[in-house]
Amino acid sequence: MKKIICTLLVVSFVTPAALLAQELWITIGSDGYQTLREKPEFIARQALEAHGERNGITILKVDESNLSGISTIMHKSHNRCGGFMVHQSLAEAQAAQLSPPPTAANRLASYTIDNSATVSALQSQITEANIRATIQSLANFTNRYYTTSTGVAGAQWIRDKWQLLTSSRSDASVQLYGHSWAQPSVILTIQGQVQPDEIVVLGAHLDSTAGFGTGEGTRAPGADDDASGIATLTDVINAIVATGYRPDKTLKFMGYAAEEVGLRGSAAIASNYRSQGSNVVGVLQLDMTNYFGSNSDIYMTIDYTNSAQNTFLRDLVQTYQSHLSVGNVNCGYACSDHASWHNQGFVVSYPFEADNSGYNRYIHTINDTLANSGGNANHSVKFGKLAAAYVAELAKGSIGGSRHSSAW
Ligand code: BES
Ligand code: ZN
Image (cartoon, rainbow, N blue to C red; front, top):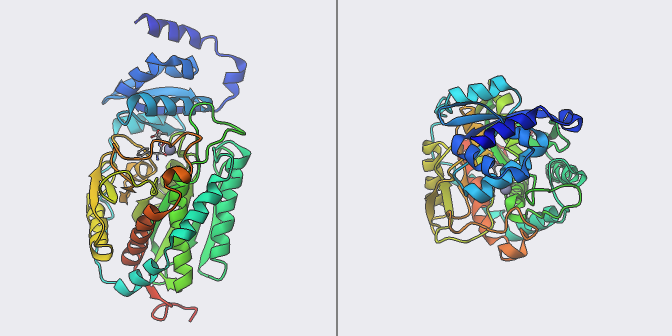
């Protein structure tokens, strides 16, 4: 009790420098809030002032500089039982606190598996060497933190890479998606030939972190978390161009900024897509695909995802990579960008590299290197082939575009 009174007293002595930082609001499980209060050394103390508790969720006002400290504590101390969402205003935080996530079922796609020629063509182009090279290029940036110059350069590198890969395609365009912080997200759009208003999203986060204190010059290779996800998507893009595949529905490949500090890039994008009324028929999240640490090959994340689409993905593995085994895993909290889509009511799935005892323990350190994921991208290839099957069977369309393409 005494601790709370002290904390509140400190609030009145906020320094002018702290007042300049951008104020944000977070919602956090009340158990997570207790954890933060026990470890105030990493966080400016005014961040520990609660602004209401409801439904087991506490609202805190924080400034931007507190986010990485909060994330570090939640990850280390709570080990998968805490989590938090970032909001731009108190009203937004209160809305999140009051209404539980919608049941992400408003746009249930009908799932069919009948495009095997396209799937096979795309899958045959997914190569370990390509994925490995992209992971290494991304890991070579000192860090890809959301506020640093190398974090911005990393996002631009992805933009340039995706632009180069698709330069022969008049149906493709790449954009930087700006935010209120330095690092942009990256979005590649491949226009659908038949139902362009129906959108299939494949995403991964492009930022990296080495935990508390990450900044300009801090080494944070993020080879698995999450260069592996971006590299996996990049090889799907390469396969699309190499085969001449043209989707019926519109594809959007997204590299999200600022995931490591509260899913901020994906939260902004998902919220924008919802308010625009975008018809997103399915979302796939790839975050950590290259560390083979458990018995099964692929683990479907059960929480903050859509079970019908998860079943569809399991069926895709069964049909097109029948030698692989698929397990289930619970993240336990809003641990990656899939939660941003889920919280806006979209259908999302998150196939993951391992179970909770086998995932890569080097993440968020200087040691999240390709060498520490085995020095190859063999595990990511399975996810690349799954993503290729997902694209061909959800967005449909065909190779060469002979049926629908206006360009042929
Ligand atoms: N890739 C991780 C999430 C993850 C870690 C999933 C280990 C499964 C096993 C992601 O980049 C991450 O670090 N997320 C943050 C979320 C937070 C900032 C809301 C985390 O877990 O601390
Ligand atoms: Zn991470």
